Amino acid sequence: FAMVVVIYPEQMLTALACAGGLAAVFTTMLTGLKNTKDELERMLHDEIPEVLELVCDSFLDQYDKISSGSSKRVIATYRKLEEELAERTHAYVKHRLENNSLIKQDVLGDEKKLPKEALGCLFTRALVKSKLWKDILHQEQHEDEHQNPEDMVQTTDTVLESLGLPQEDTTKMHYLDLRMRLEDKEREEGGENIHKYGPDLQQKLMKVYVRMQDVHMETPPDVHEALINPKRLAKCMHRANLAKFKTLEHPKEAGSKSSLQICIQSLNEEQVDQVDLYLVEHLDDTLSQVDISELVTPFVETTIPVEVQKQVRFALDMTRQDSSAQQLYDQLRRKKNSIPRRQVKQRLTLNRQNDPDGLMSFLADIGVVERTAQRRNAAHYNGLFHRVEGLVSDWKREDEEGHDVKDPIVDPRDLEGFVHELLKHRIWWGAMESILKNIGF
Image 1: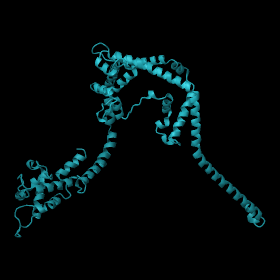
Image 2: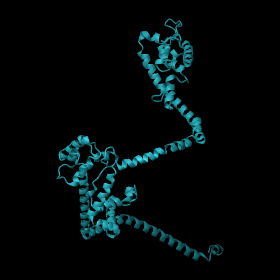
Image 3: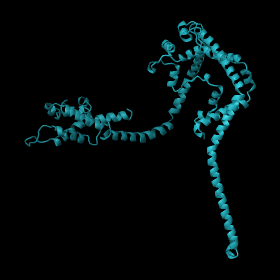
Image 4: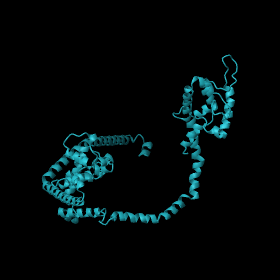
């Protein structure tokens, strides 16, 4: 078509007009289709949640009318199972505490207390020392009175809540609400952000979901057989719990151990028998020359020098908070201002090398040199003394009459400048102590 248009342009004018018209028609159709699709999506985005909510309300109303009888039967069966299990567990606890009348009185109270209430009292005291049980009992007896939260006694619920495990009595929940909580895996695993609807509609959709399961999900034959007789199921659950408890019980023979203690002891003995083998394997792995060279060489050649340079830079930085240099000059000002006026000359005069008083003693007080270095005649002390001796002669001032001062003394006004020049680009005793401590010594 393009070749014909190029060769015979005058004869193809009508065809070109038709082709342009078709292109315009198709473009208009596609644009209109896109706009209509966007408009429908906007309308559905607002209307679908409303439609879903109406459908959910209709289904829930119809379900309540049709399945009210079956729901009551399930709840009644659940209550029978709960009561039977509570009575059996209550009898077991009563038997265990028959030789301890004090704890039995605190936990079980009088004979009129219901089994469920007695088990609740036992759970409340489970993680609390027995010496606090009387306070808990007093708190339970005065539960109706107004109590200060700060004065309330710690119970199992508060202990678990402080550990991030708040407790809730799910026995009071409707069985479908409990199933709804268990089935909401997305919320449990942190997927609540994938829901596209609000929390109210999410709640209704979950209610519809669990009720559809209740209506259409077939119960396996063995599960159905176990559920039709709640007393037998409670007896089986109680026997299973007793089997666990028996592993914790001590036999009547003196000095004997429980089954659980014997099991733990045998496992510990097996581990002890293998300790020599584990020790040899560990040493063989950790003392490998290849591993040592791969780990230690970069650490010694790169990491340690960089860390030492960093700590030296931090220690000598006057602008860094609590650095060794800042602490030195703060200590220098405090010591200088605390010297009595009549003792200034004595403290700032450089005496002989073996004299414990004078300027060298002042430098030891502010941390420039270690205190016992002079007495031990340490090498670094001798070098520092000769450097101080040379600087003192440069920093001496003239007296009031304009004559040179003969005594090797530093003027108090020049003390900070003198110390700054003395320690310029050098590390003193206090800074070295801080550096070694920061790098792990």
